[in-house]
Length: 191
Image (cartoon, helix red, strand yellow):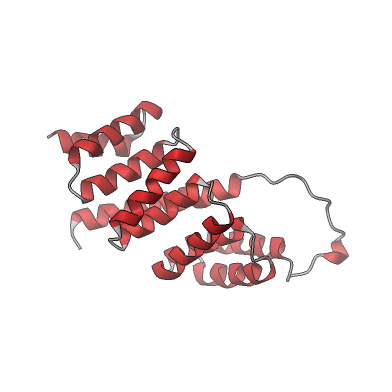
């Protein structure tokens, strides 16, 4: 494995973890709390909580099984789908992860983080045009998220569009001045 491939793998893993963290911070409107008797291990929320615990324990196979069960119970829940996509990608099943993120986007096409996640997977599978389309869509939704610029720049470097990549890294740094990874990549391009 080349240094560039190792770097790309590390960046993808970092981004996937950030997506997972972001998903965990999303807040839904408060719902009535069910009584203790009405909660079962088959409840999608309980299954998601167990999956979160499994991810913390780095038991990604168990997390995938729990999230798949939760998805069967709540097929239109994008939070479940996005977490499942993250876990499937971590387990190396990129095709299933891409399809899972695509399913989430069919439900809610206005989630820039999901567009970012699927774009990173398309980049890993060398489907560069699809990756580009999703990064562009993510920027349409939120043009203030420095990670999108950074990841898009990485794609542009990979496809030989170094001048455009410089602009993207600079924008990432404009949004977050202490974004060390972007600064390092920008420095490499300027050498």
